[in-house]
Length: 305
Ligand SMILES: Cc1ncc(COP(=O)(O)O)c(C=O)c1O
Image (tube, rainbow, N blue to C red; front, side, top):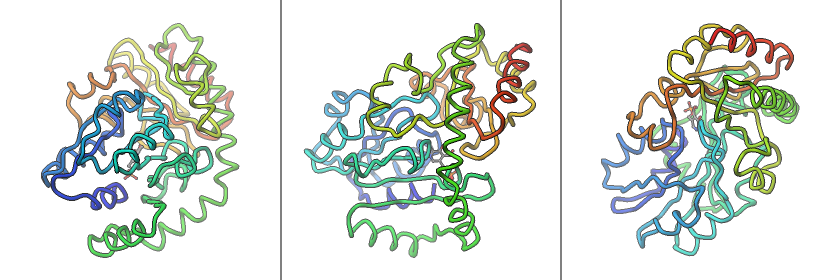
């Protein structure tokens, strides 16, 4: 969140920002409870629809902030398409690349201006450090971000930096296993009768599969699905044994979480409804354990539903 805060510190009163509607709710919390108080107008748009993005542009639009794939519905935004629209209107594009990591998606090569990562997730990879990173494409980005770090104080400790640097050394290896397991789990869930609305961009049934193939180097290991109700979700989460019922993502261990009360607990029911997150939605971050063990765990937990 310090990285996203440094990003929005580039803005000024009177600026207009377009943000993907389906984003990590902490981003919405920052925008709604802090940034909007600075007379910066934030507009949430379905950025998977390029026509909607173009229609939302205003003369004072300075930034389009997108998350792709999005959290938790795995909706994709065409980065190159949004960059074209933004640049034609004099705005910049920032991409929250946390869900794929630099191993699987290169937004700058697709025309984005700034990439943001929560290093807490895949870059660290072991769920033992908190941090964020901003990667700009212009000298003025570096100047501004360094100033914000120094002036506002959102800096990582040397030990956290060490953990992220150590994590990055195994990023490609971990990602390979995350991907293999992610695909296996998604294929298993896609045929389960109690599971609906499975969102994983690596399945051909995902409505944006072609875009995933075009702009990503892989599909990652994040996915989400629906059970029928909050009660069913509760039973599932109480029954899982290898998966931990926890909110983070991108570590070597598999996690499952109830979206409406964890990652998206800080936004209103109305906002969740507008995003399409219902009370039975479960998000999975697939780790690097033995995939047969993971599938067996899901099987027994779904039996408890
Ligand atoms: C997509 C995304 N961006 C940003 C964040 C914020 O990361 P942090 O908890 O490291 O501040 C999260 C956290 O879950 C996230 O999922």
